[in-house]
Each structure stands twice: as C-alpha cells, then as structure tokens.
Image (cartoon, rainbow, N blue to C red):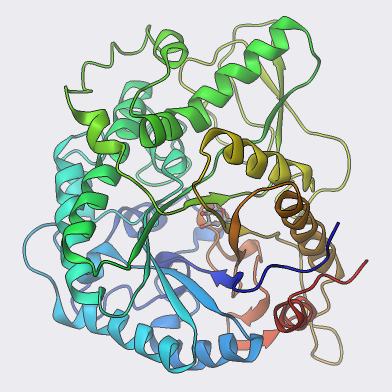
Length: 466
Ligand code: FCB
C-alpha cells in the first residue's frame, strides 16, 4: 500500500459558524435556534453559549494566518444564516455577507480554497418559531437563502456544501432533543428529515442557477458505520434499521430519488409519510459533484430483548431516543480505545464507509468533510500543548483513507475537525477537538503538536509509518 496521497488531494480543516464566530449580537445578526437553546438553563453543559466562542468573527485574519502556517489547501467554514438573512426571509444583510466576503478574500490571498457550508445547524429562530424543519415552508426559505449566498459569494467560493449532518438536525434536534431546538416529537423529527432533504435539493438547484459553471456542489452527511454485534438474524435486522434511519434516509433520496421501503415500514406506526409530495424525491436527487462524509466512530448494535426505544451508547446522550421506530435495538460500546467524547477509536469504520459509497455511488467523488477527536488537552509547563493521542487518531484515520484510495475509492480531500478548539454543542467548551488550542480566557491560540504533525503530512503529501 502506498503512503502517498494523490497529487491535488485537498488538505483542509473545518469549523462551523456557531462554534467559532461569537459576535452573536453584532452587525444585525439575530438569534438562531442554537442561541435560544444554549441560553436556556440546563441545555448546554456549564451553561456555555456561543456568544463569544473563539471570537473568530474578530480574529478572522489571525486565524487565516494560522491556517497558512499549517499549509492548508482548503478551509471548510459555515455561514451563519441569521447573520446574512436575519429574519430567515427577505433581504440579505450586507454587513453579514461582508464578513464572509472578507474571509474568502483572506483565504484566497493565502492560496487557501474556501469551502462553504450553508447550514451547520443554526436555523434563524424566527423560522423555528414558525414551525422549523418539520414545516415544509422552511425548505423553501432555505433555497432562497442559498440563492442569496450563492449570488454574493459565487465569485469567490468553488466548493459548496448544502447541509451538514442533517441526521443531527432532524433527530438530535427534534427527537431526542439534545440539540437545538430541543423538541422531542418523533413524527416531527421524520418530517424534519424529509424537509431537510427537500431543502438540500431545492438549494442545490438554486445554487446551480446562480453559481459559475465550474462550481462544485456537495452535502456533508454522517452516515453511520453500523455493525451488528453478531451475525444472528436479530442483530443483522437491528443494524439494518439503524442504517435506514441514520444513512439511507438521506442517501437513498439524494442519490437514487426514493425513500427505502424498509424505513417506511419501520416508521409506519409514527407516520404515513404523506408529507412527501409527488415530485419531491426528484428534486432531492439533484446531481452532486462529490459526497461529503463526516466520520468519528462506528456503532455496534444488537437486537434488544426489551422493547425500549433505541439509545446511543456513543455519547449522544439524552433521556429520549434519537431513533424513531427503532424499538428493540441495543447499542454497545465497541472495546478498545476511546476519545474524550467516549467515542471508540476505530478507523475501519471510515474505510468501510468510503468503500461502501464507492460501490453504491460509482463515479461520485468522496471527500472526508470531517474527522478528528477530542482529548483533554492542556498546556504543559513550557506552554506547549502535546497531544500524541490526537496524532495517533489522525494517523490511523488518514491510513484508512490511504487504504481506501489504494482499493479504488475516489477520495478527493480530507478536512480535520477542527481547526480550533470550539463550542462543542451540548458539551459546551468542555471538549477540545482543535489542532490549535484556544485559551478561552484570553483567546490566545497555541498550535498543538498535532497541528505541526498535520502540517508535515500536508507538506510532504505522505503519511510516515507510525
Ligand atoms: C459533528 C459536527 C461538528 C462537530 C463534530 C465533533 O457531528 O458536525 O460540528 O461538533 O461532530
């Protein structure tokens, strides 16, 4: 197996608006569902909010300098919808768009390709108050927003991502409620999943209409690398159900224009899916230029003897299940090393997903749009932050990418999650995923040893043997 990445391989790092920007009340930005959720006591660990986050809104220039030091070829960021279209409808905010124009200009000046995600979970609160993702109207609002951002940034951004991890938006947001908006309604979650799919298709169409011909479109999904605990028929069926609810609910309409029959059957007691209208799946199946895969850890499932709703064992937490219709499924922690999230370290899950989509979507390039690990990093006496576990994690997962490349997967790029330590959703600032350490009291940035390690991989285009 080669240790070299192909020429032109896109080396990146990723962040998301609410997790890094701060400036929550500046320049006309209105609250998103994450502002409301985080400001509600008890929702986020330690009462943390994204009000200041890593202050990237004001430190953009310095942060792009850090990216240049790392030698990044690309930076994946998301646009805050309520910053550029404060009420979720109607005219754009010039000041909001100016921030992203300036960010893109800074990146381009350093030879770093801007990779833009339209939606990384921060729905304008006004749209949630009007019903949120369970309402079909939200999909049309998203398409308008996509059009407006496409028009403003199409001259600067070549790679566009519609949604980030719609599974989390639908099922953590509306079923288990551990993410904003914190609702716990299984039917609403399934409606949300469909309207996110529809939003993706409508936005892809809107973007195509305004973007230059060479622009590329993608979506960042978090398909689960789900494994049956044993080969027994019961465990295999548990795995099939979770695969339907986590992965095929998005990939089948997006890639094939249909919802899987087994998913509809599994969820029949919750909904008849009559919210899917004629023609919707044709809209959702809009041609993509690449499929974005976010991967952290695999899941192991078995048939449960009780009939309780399925619950994750991988740190998604919550009192309620994020798996509507998946009663009788038990989740298990795979043995072996874990990250500070409690997630298993298992790069074979990434390999398996890359090979799966190589088979299931032949001809569609793949991009690892997120991969990384949280550890309890602390500066040492010398002020340096040594994170050998993260280096080992990244090394192993880049090894999985190389193995997939060797076996025929068309992987075009890899984005480390995350450039900086940041606001890790319901875990607040307690989990550090960054290659760069952030001291939240001073906002000082210190590249960890993994940042230097990653810079060397980027510079040489090669993974040295561990
Ligand atoms: C993913 C999210 C990203 C980050 C990582 C750890 O699910 O897309 O924002 O929180 O997990």
